[in-house]
Amino acid sequence: MAAAVAAGLADAGVTIRVAADAYGAGFVPIREERYDLAIAEREFDSPGVRAILDALGSGSFAREVSGMCGYDTGEMGSRIEQAL
Image 1 (cartoon, rainbow, N blue to C red):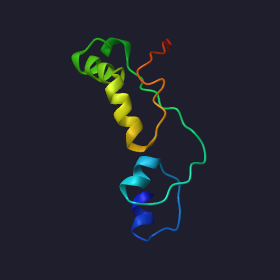
Image 2 (cartoon, rainbow, N blue to C red):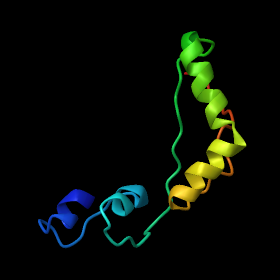
Image 3 (tube, rainbow, N blue to C red):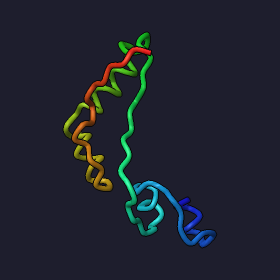
């Protein structure tokens, strides 16, 4: 959507702030969204997943993400367990 607005193909649309910023488009927040990362239990201890979780739990990474476009990273890296 941000690309379409930037190219003049649309006057407005719904997108995330980081996309609007990347295309130099204006951004008006209309609501907050929470994003969770779902990981299959059998994959939880794999090296790749551990690396992602370590990064998400890192204060420096949270500051970098927050600095990109003001996202609330207060709960980044916290673990929510739910058996399906």
